[in-house]
Amino acid sequence: MATNSNRRLFFKRDGYGNKADMSFIEHLEALRWHIVRAGLVWIAVAIALFIKIDWIFDHIIFAPAESDFITYSGLCNLSHYLHLGDSLCMPPVNIQLQGNTVSGPFMSAISIAMIGGLIVAFPYLFWELWKFIKPALSKKELQYSRGGIFWVSLCFFLGALFGYFLLAPFTFNFLANFTLGTKGAYRYMPTLDDYIDTLNNIILGCGLSFELPILAYVLAKIGLITSDFLKKYRKYAFIIILIVAAIITPSPDWTSQVIVAVPLLLLYEISIFIAARVDKDKEKKEKEWS
Image 1 (tube, rainbow, N blue to C red):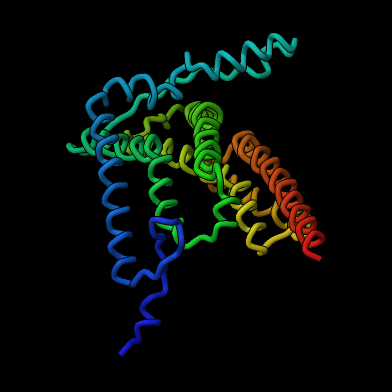
Image 2: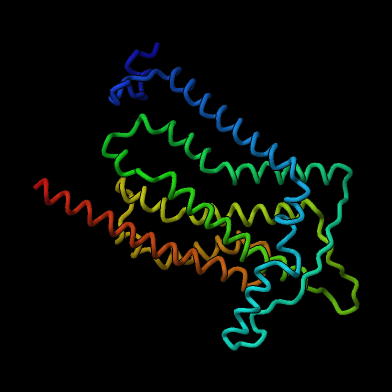
C-alpha cells in the first residue's frame, strides 16, 4: 500500500501563499474543475460563433479565397508604390466550393465554430492551465513567469494573423490557379470540408509555431538550453524549420514555404537573443551570490 508521503506529490497554496501538501485525489479534482471551466468557456464561445456562422463564413472563412481580399490589394498597391509594376500582384482567385455529403455544411459549421472558439478563447484556456500549474511553482519561478499569459497569447494571435492574412491567401491563390494538362480536363473545385481543414491547419499551425520564443525562454530558465546551444545547432534548426514550413503549407508552392520559413527563422534568432539574456541574468546572479 502506498504511503501518505508517496501520495502527496503535489502542492497547493494556503491563504498566506505558502505551499501545502496536496493529495493525488485533490490534484485530480483540481484538474477536473480546470478542464470543466475551460470546456464550458470553449463551448460558450463556439455557440456564440455558431449563431453568427453565416456572417463568419462570408466575411472571415471564405474571404482569403476571394479576389477582393485585403492581402491581394495590399500587396498589389505595395508593388506599385515600390515601382515594381505588377510583380507582387497575384492573379484573381475564383474558387467554388462543393459538397459531397448531406451533412457536409452542418459539420463544417460545427468545425468552424469549435476551432474559432478555441482561437478566441485561447487566453482563457491557457489561463486555466496556468492556474493548475501555478501552485507547484516557487516564488522565484512565479516572478519569472509574470506576464506569461499575455506573451503566450500575443505570440499565438500574431501567428494566427500571419497565417490568415499572408499564408492562406498565397496558398489558395496558388492552388486555385494551378492547372494540370492543356485540354481543360482538370477543374479545381475543392470540397467545403477540405477548404476549412486547410485554413484551420494554416492558422493553428502558424499560431503554435510563433510560440517558439516563449518555449526558448522557459527552457532557458530551467537550464535545458543556452544561447550557445542554440547557436551551435542553428544549421540543424534551419533544416527542421524548412521541414516544418513544408508541413504547415499544404501547397507545394515554394513562395508559400518561404513566407512561413522566414518568420520562423527570425523567431529562432529572437529565441537565441532571449536565451542570451537569460544566461546573462544567471551569470549576474551567480556573481552576486559568490
